[in-house]
Length: 200
Image (cartoon, rainbow, N blue to C red):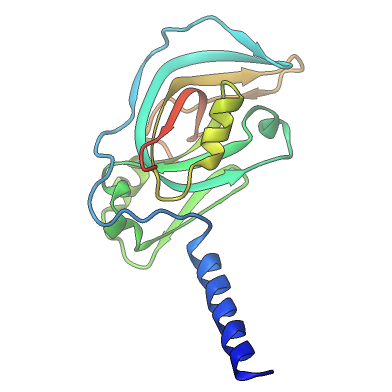
């Protein structure tokens, strides 16, 4: 291998390593709280049930949020994926500050969001109550594309409804109605009517 080819090969390895480390299209905005307010939840204005393919959707609360995308995970298998093909882990308040986030390891799998720290940059309860894994149910194909295009680090704004989902055979999937819970059943299930990335 000639010296020029060696340099090109090493440069390619460095580039690939950088992409794998930083993720595709990851957004860095710098330090500071980027989404200061907690999600806004109100009693459901739209109380009428409606159908999504074979599933019945029951709105339970109006929901609006501006937050930082901490992670995105698509799903293709299971009944949950029929309804909600993608999860976004979102952070607000201190969990939208990259000075805090750089000390927290975040992962998603099996419709859950997990975090790990070596030392707590903020109290545990602040991490738990200022971030959540949220299951997205796009209201249409345009919304679905926007959600899928959201990158880790983006600031997004969405509006819709927290919902419960049921099937004729008795299968059910319920949304959390509080940001104070953790563990199984603590995720929000959102019928997304509006979705915008604010960091384009």
